[in-house]
Amino acid sequence: MAIPALLTAFASLTLAFPVDGRAEGNASVTAAEVVEARVVAENLEVFDQPKDAGYVVAGLKRGDRVRIRWKEPAPAGWLAIEPPPTVVCWIEEAAVERPEDAGPADHVGVSTRTRVRTAHAVVRSGNPEARLPGPPCQTLERGEPVLLVDRPALTFGGGRGRRWLAIAPSSNQSFFAAADGIGWDRPTSPAAPPPVDAVRAGYQPAADSESAVDPELRRIDGMLQAIVTGQPVENWKLADVRAEYQTLLKSRPALEESLRSRLAQVTRYEQAAKSAQRIIAIVSKSRRRDEEVAKVERKMVTSAQESRRLFDAVGFVQPSSRMVNGHKVYALIGREGTAVAYLDIPPGLDPEPLLAHRVGVRGHSRFNGELGTRVIAVSDLENLEPKR
Image (cartoon, rainbow, N blue to C red; front, side, top):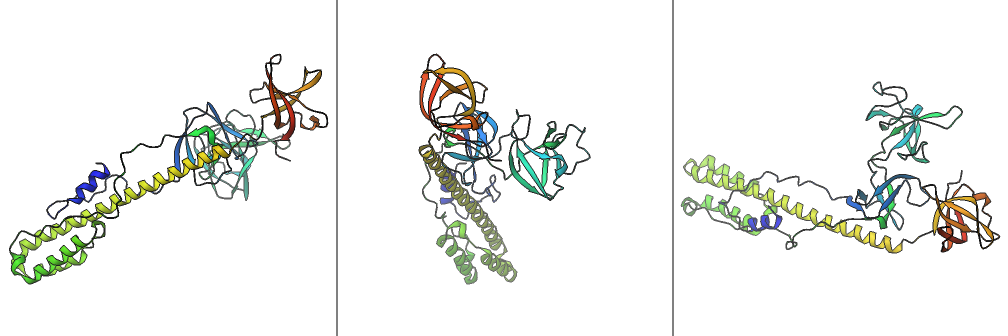
């Protein structure tokens, strides 16, 4: 039943109307800190840090679902998201206890749980298509739980190499994606009900003669009427009224039938009060969720407006044999291994220290028909690889 219909039902509630006090669904859902969203870009890269120089841990396609952690702060143009299902991290084998059910020495069974055995364990980012672990992304302390996943171990670092095991990201670990590549459909809902400050109900006096002639019974009935007509349903506290009826029942056996009927009515009122409390809690949480969605929408609009391309192109600088206007240009190699642009680097800007490095390029772009791609008259080159 829709919430407005429930409110209408409570507005006409009387003593003769029984209310089932059982919970309808889960009314204890807390305010959402995670918002469902979808990828609107054709391809969206997920990074371990909110910057272009971060390590790519996964690639998403248009229509893929993501869960935004909207309360987690992120720089303009970025949103924190929960780990996509394909993301893995890596931890050194010597840093964790090896379970007895871990499987063969070179392969770990599915969803094997273990713990960190060293004082500190470095966790490295991972990419499903990479052959080596990525940069450090987290440090775990001794005793912290680790979930190993079903991937072959890697050998990396040290003399003969250390073995690294694939693990699932920790539950509190966030990853990051560009805000302009994410959007969502705001849930549609019927027109909002009027403000629910209180749920009121009507009162129907008992239809017997005892209350007219017995002053004590009439007094207790008056207490009940004052509570029911003077307070919102969710605020009804009827324990004292119930106790008064039960005391009178012990001293007035002749009124047993009338008092039993009134006690049953008190029970229905108590059930009604509990149901009203649940309804108001649901409405309040629904409103808070709408407010939270609106906040995220505003944040995304602001991020999209504030975000600007920091670079005209990003890639790896390599020498080339191509010439433009009689002088040599450098190739900028993209993620697919092909030239995404050629760099026309002016005198005074030395590219040699940046060869084979991932760089961000700023400058004026123009399309060159002979080369079949852009030529960028470079004004600045910035090394995007972390300093060692």
